[in-house]
Length: 314
Image 1 (tube, rainbow, N blue to C red):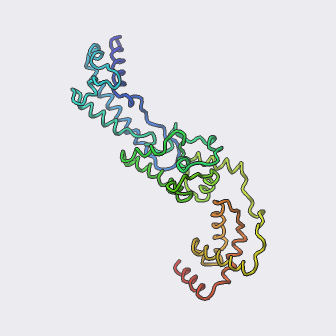
Image 2 (cartoon, helix red, strand yellow):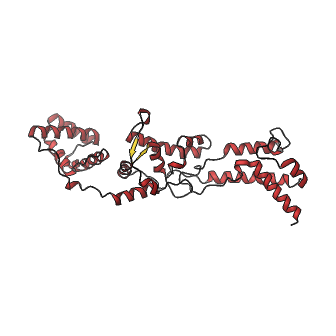
């Protein structure tokens, strides 16, 4: 290859770089194992379109002389005198192709949430006490909250239905957090990281590997409370008070957990204990089950008939 050819190749490469501007160094992100929808083809398809544009421009410029390339095409980035970026110039079709490329450039999360370069740093967040709803949602999908603006993520809507799919997943997790920890429209919401980890564990919701690492680390650092060793703090209940408590407990268990049979008392008690953990209560599962079973003895004929009807419906 002659020196002239080398010079021409370098000129063409530089012209293409200046013409592409911010697209010149675009590369597909590296998708890592994670949670939620993933569409690696979104980035690979765009990479193919970008390569086709480069090849087309390179083929046209290869027909020009070095002098013509220097004087006519080698313009500053964004120059209005670049023939390749003039709307009504001789390369108007290349202008339109480039505009379509700019409009369809997929966001960094276009393949999925677990993209290298934006992954959550578990060590940093392990030390957090409270976090916002937005941070919690990003932690659940494995994205480093310090690297992104939550609201700006949704600029990717309607760009590609596959990207919409990825954003819907994040929105669903955000709505779950709102229902569990509070609505930000009613005031700022702060979530204790321990409460988030406990909720994730007990709900069984799928989360990122990185948040999973945080949960495992916290469990090693904070031993689980032995509920059997936690004594009841209240004094023994008077007989009438105990009966009223059992009736109220049964009503709540019937309404919220569908308790209709004495054999399910332990299972429902376990669910009530789990719910109590969310607000920092330390309930005695065996004691609750005992009171639930005792509550069946307070049912009158109408109550027993209602339970029988509910059992038949199941």
